Length: 128
Image (cartoon, rainbow, N blue to C red):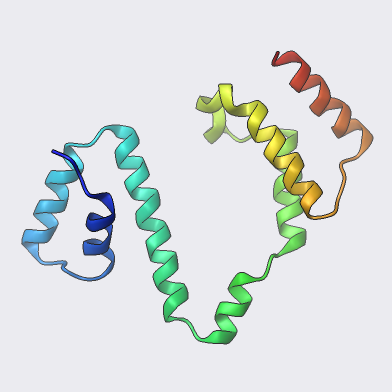
């Protein structure tokens, strides 16, 4: 069975919530691996956000698209200091996460303090 996740997401997000559709969706979900189910759930959340955005008025859309720079920087700095427990299974990807966090900080025109820079360099050196 090859699941058309985008079609499944469309059925959930755009109506078709009858009992037969729900049963079919549950059957399709039960045949997926854990990773596929997680991917589906993320895609479903994203479709919900897109639908909310699409149904919003222009002023709300404009606000939703604004980068909340201070909040982004706080989130990135916190992530650089210590990745949360949800990232523990991603140990092999932590150097990439460190890179992308540093890159995001640079894109926002900011730098990290000397201590945090030294800690990041030390961490990346230990990953080799």
